[in-house]
Image (tube, rainbow, N blue to C red; front, top):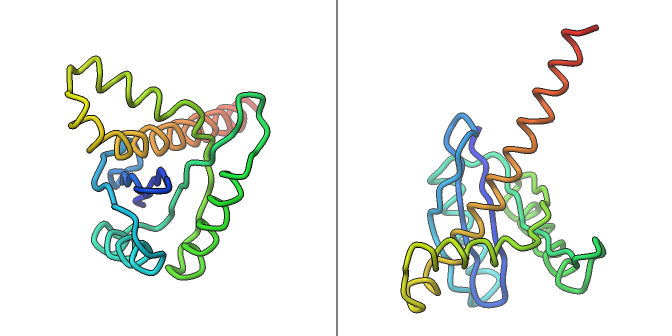
Length: 149
């Protein structure tokens, strides 16, 4: 099952997709936002191309764990995606993913212009990879629990 990760911003949407086994995330696109209908159509095309069965939206949280106005906007966007694309949407804590993406790109010695082109896509990769790693960890924990009983 392929999963799509989204880093939804005001100007762009970073998009990542998992491999078929759900082990690794790869960045596939940065959508330049225009109209909501156009954004949804871009996502629809990517969902179809990659045969995605679930979407994970990065959900911005404050450092103290509370949700702010941006989180509400992401939830509304996710609800629209779920409704219009008929695909389940989960949310994942995206705290510091853009910061981590920036640091990774700086360490890779990318110019500011090139970083700007790929930072949202890399943030989507981090969101999706963290989501998949957590799900795998929970599954392993459950399996271990079942075998020990």
